[in-house]
Image (cartoon, rainbow, N blue to C red; front, top):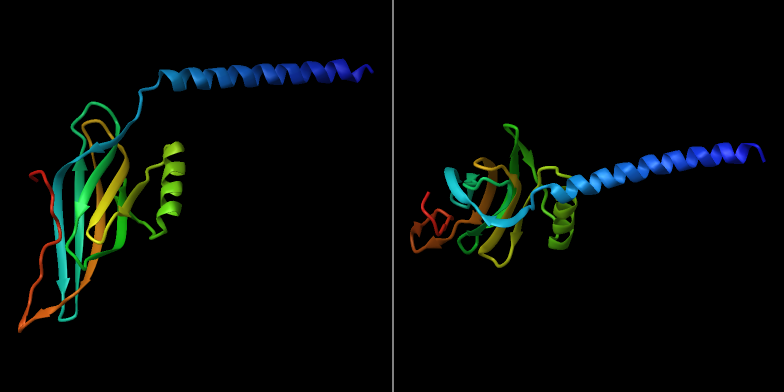
Amino acid sequence: MGKWPHLFRKCVMRRGVIIILLSALFYTAGSAQQRVFNYPLKLKSCDVTINVNQFMATTILELEFYNPTSTEVEGYQRLTFNKGQVVSGFQLDLQGKYREGSIEERWKATNTYNTIVGKRIDPAIIQMYSPTEYGLNIYPVPAKGSRKVKITLQELMKEDGSVITYRLPMLFRDTT
């Protein structure tokens, strides 16, 4: 019976420390700035690389998006590509090096993205809404800062009479 009060005191002390730590976590979380979701970003720069042969066209878009606000945001950009162009690759710039993304089903990709955002790791996701409409989310985009992504598109070249035509796939509503 002599051991129990000693063990109980240890448990109480540990619980006291845990309660204090949790209180500190809740206090700092409550005082942190609210996160801004789906903030429309400005396209700061765009580099395009096009590789075309008689069968396929591969377009690599390196896009830099800018956050003009004084708050860190989750950036959002709606992208419109041409009919027949599909996203075959996606990369996010992390400290000057591009990190390859994977193509997943929407529900799995969305769950992974939301889990990573909760851990404050830098994720990005591109989602297909229709054959020509995509949505891009990047987190975080720092205040007055920018983030880069690379999107690889592929399309089957089609002959129209004796002419094969290539169209640059980007349609943005704002000026770059």
